Amino acid sequence: MREIMISHTVTGLDVMCRHCGNAETATTTYLKHFRLEGTSKDSVTLRCLCCHTAMSTPLGQLSSLYHHRAS
Image (cartoon, rainbow, N blue to C red; front, side, top):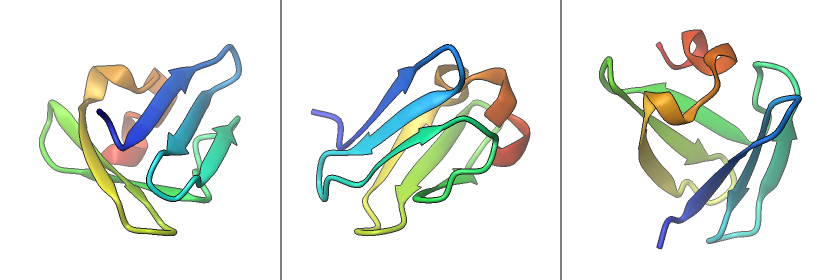
């Protein structure tokens, strides 16, 4: 089971941490409750700023708006 869920919407991303319940609907490229950490050219680590749970995900799962934020 994935600790952090990513759902695509028309206006951005819905991100939810299953560990602590932290959730965000991102309509801009800036995430307030999560941090994108670039680890390689093909993957990114998404970290919850509340409980510090992290999940590695392919960069293709993020919308094109978030690619430059993960670099």
